[in-house]
Amino acid sequence: DRITDHRINYSRGNLPGALNGDIDDMIEKLHSRELELLSNEAG
Image (cartoon, rainbow, N blue to C red; front, side, top):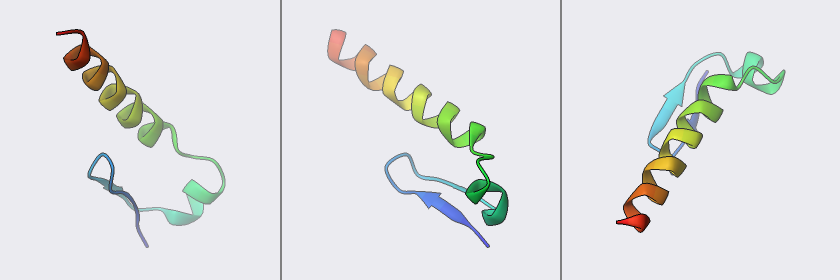
């Protein structure tokens, strides 16, 4: 079992855990990517 976010090129196992709300790792990766994009926009 696997869940993937193709926007940030991140995959992880434990699909049942993700469905139960254990997605802190994905949120952290998304947040890091957002900060990276904002930093690039600022120059």
